[in-house]
Length: 93
Image 1 (cartoon, rainbow, N blue to C red):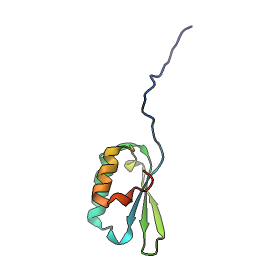
Image 2 (image 1 turned 90 degrees about the vertical axis):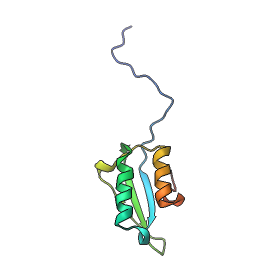
Image 3 (image 1 turned 60 degrees about the vertical axis):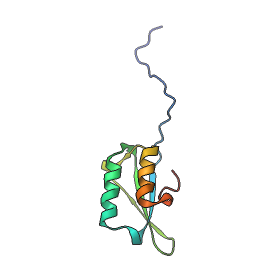
Image 4 (image 1 turned 120 degrees about the vertical axis):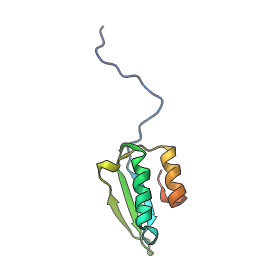
């Protein structure tokens, strides 16, 4: 038997689910947009990012970010997001 290719298994599983960030529409300003852009840029990966802007009635408008803002889902990303936007910004992380 002869192997021409092989892959080394790892204990980490790659989570490719989209990252959904929930932010109240009334608190999202230019400063928060810049912070969000900076945070996402520091965590490049393969997961799509979606931003759910929630109004006072609880209805959400969901925006999908382009490929430039795809991220790696990990605890350091989650921590940064929660520090800036609060613990409720990542309900499904």
